[in-house]
Length: 221
Image 1 (tube, one colour):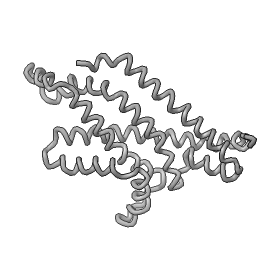
Image 2 (cartoon, rainbow, N blue to C red):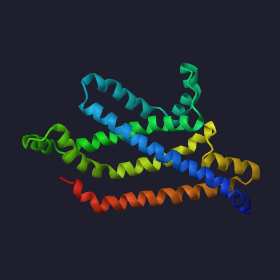
Image 3 (cartoon, rainbow, N blue to C red):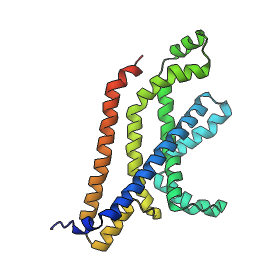
Image 4 (cartoon, one colour):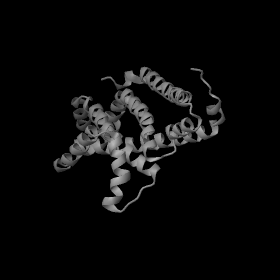
């Protein structure tokens, strides 16, 4: 079989537009997931006892349900139940955020829990409030310890945006499918998509790993 990338080359602007949408969806999902995940973790660890029940159920259910199911449910079932119709991009953003936030919450909980309780007690003895102890002692160490896991979350998020093609979000994978169908060159189209994902993700994971190697000692105690 001869490879012919001419159709892909001719469609580079079209594919570049999909790549831009992929990066936008990924960035928004990562930001929102980090915010929501931290809030869920703190609510579970330090909130009232009754709050931990729905939060634990949310975390466990999101980790037990495939992200594709969450995406399809939000896009197709939510309008039937609430009358709220979300455009494909926003439905994908909500679904990915709901799903990824559960994993972030567990990463944050593990990171905070890994800091020895004696440090918290020492901060309280010195007259610091619980908020000050969390902000100045616990979180700085926990965030460094969470870096490798956060790097994995970023990689997973970027790859998971590909499922948005199911609800016709015109991101990279959806546009790759379109080029493949129009040119009858699926091998070439998806090979290019694979290379693009690799060129995005490999530097991200390496940079986070390098950052952790340089500052990881600050998270030790």
